[in-house]
Length: 272
Ligand SMILES: Cc1cc2nc3c(=O)[nH]c(=O)nc-3n(C[C@H](O)[C@H](O)[C@H](O)COP(=O)(O)OP(=O)(O)OC[C@H]3O[C@@H](n4cnc5c(N)ncnc54)[C@H](O)[C@@H]3O)c2cc1C
Image 1 (tube, rainbow, N blue to C red):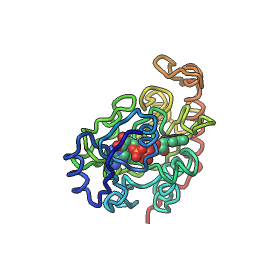
Image 2 (tube, helix red, strand yellow):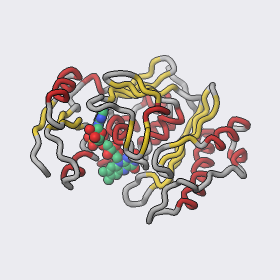
Image 3 (cartoon, protein in one colour):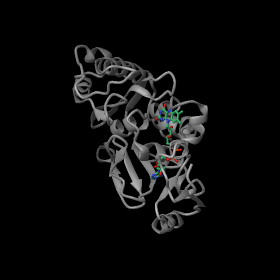
């Protein structure tokens, strides 16, 4: 690891000042991606700005028809939150499937979205549920946020503050995990809202995407059977030692059916 200077920020303003003044500063959340990268000498930031002490980045609240999750909430906190479980059980269940207990207790939703790993779980939920990503500068729609492999529309030094998820009628996530890392070989989030159905896929392509053929079929009838004969082309999908593109395309159909079954079994959206 190269030498760096550590700063613990206590407010967003302080974090922004530190980011503006450093040579090549980086935001530090749980460190679950950033620190291994630095240990391998693949990243060499001059300064680490730790945002864990900023109260404004915490909290899970339900306001009207939107669930708001602070950027520093860990996956375990989202999974265990009664507010999240009641408002969007599919999202809480997704958080409980990320990595292992160690990963879930350090990794954060803000760090996961900023990192935009092509096999990460949250991007599928953000896209299917139509989340709004709030930052220190603006609000970004999920459909405009995930731009490419490990790329987002965040500007340099822009900090994700919270993520707002409109509560759906019903929704669920199903993934086929890599047995070693638990990252998604393929993960599918299905959401039925008042405005229709959205099906988002992670792990299969270079960046999370909507499976529109699946969404259209489920809009006609929200049932497993509605997906019979609906397929995704393997063209452009990831192929590696874990799975071929054709296998991933096949898995998308299997995971979509599983997600529909789970969604239909849920009592959803009973905010009080
Ligand atoms: C062994 C292992 C298994 C994993 N398995 C899974 C899995 O199954 N599914 C899954 O989805 N993920 C998985 N992950 C990823 C993990 O869940 C974390 O979400 C991810 O590593 C990000 O970690 P972090 O929150 O600690 O962010 P950090 O590592 O601290 O930061 C990551 C990047 O995001 C930037 N950043 C952090 N917070 C913000 C913010 N608020 N605003 C702007 N930029 C920010 C940082 O500058 C850095 O560039 C796994 C990770 C490991 C190590």
